[in-house]
Length: 179
Image (tube, rainbow, N blue to C red; front, side, top):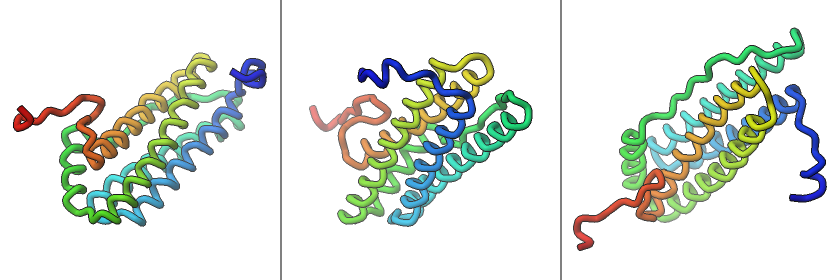
């Protein structure tokens, strides 16, 4: 820990909301870029869903910031996630694998790695806010942390499947033919 980190004071709720907006905007933009370079309908669909969900987060955070400016408080509302089940994700990733050429695979792996980095940074920020904030602010950021941790899992699962690491959602896959 650096001296600056040790002496840094917690963010105000307004600073936290503005910082959250920066994270959400960056990750949304990564997914929008990924939609443009996706090599098939599955990749476009997965990246598109994630981009729309991040836009929903931006809209929600903007509404909370507006409420803060008007009333001096925030009222957390339930934040929905459209991330599908692990089974649906697995089917989509397998479908994605069948449509990728080596060049497209490299491009999509690069986009997924970029997305994973952004999602991890965003999750780390929300974890920090949960630790520092209180009451309504804490519960709002806890919802975001849960959703962003889900995004990390989805992106990591897609990376694992496309790279053939033998893992899916942090579980080792097995091969009955491997003996």
